[in-house]
Length: 416
Image: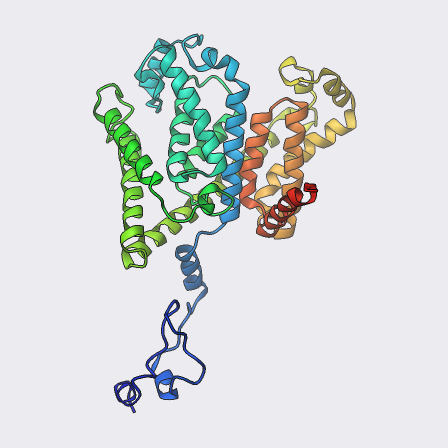
């Protein structure tokens, strides 16, 4: 008996309905012949197939991406608020690195920044405070597709205005600002995750940003910042990136309203998962390269070889925010020796510990404590917090969920 015969004989007992149907199928309501005619669902037959299905089927490391987003939004926001009284000297009209000198350097390296578009205090103040708002939006996860792009624009604009400011932490923020644009970092622990439906505010924001981008593109004041091609690899300017992100955001919203369950939206969602997973992989590789290169360069240094490398920065005024503490630590010969050698061992060994989850977690906790010590003793909070935020890409999901559950219980305990 074939399927057509069964349908004709039992019109009320058709094939099982899909999830979300009006009436669920009760056990025994479908004839065995019909069940036999339905092919069984087959999973991937090989590890490579399972890996490909996971790579395109879902966004991996959602909680880690959220922590990275929160961490770097907090780092950049804290830096901007700390330097708010000095903003005009650092990036504005009172900067010793004048606009003319910055223009010469930008003409050579082709770095992106919007600060040279208009001179004077008003424009620099506007960009600086927009950077504060963008960092706050990224921290909270509000309209993250737009806020991460604004975060990228403001980070590049301020840092490329004067490349002689900052330390290694600024370089990490610079890189992660680029990577966050391509991640789905607001699926958990964000205001976007709490919002139901796309809403009209997103459409208005998308239209406003498109109008602003059009004015910047065709207004004639952007110079070489917004170009379609570039002389260096990948030979594409910033215009294709910004217009492409804007178009994809519009297409995403349109398909979500018109055909939320259609195949085009499914394909777009799979592509978004692939881009997110690739970006998370790049972030992880970036962290590994930072530690590996730093460790191997330290191995070649004579001061690291004899264990005295930490002694010298503890006696420099720039790295002694607490002179008494620095003098106390610097006077202890054995701890300085052990910390110097331990730093080298940790950084060199970190890429190899990724092969063992337990060893990796222990080493990750030790490195976080080391960065906290660097922030307190050497006075490098931006660098230390940026590295801790980058290390979050390797945190285990179980530990993050446990910490989130603990944090949710705090308001309940404090309520009388």
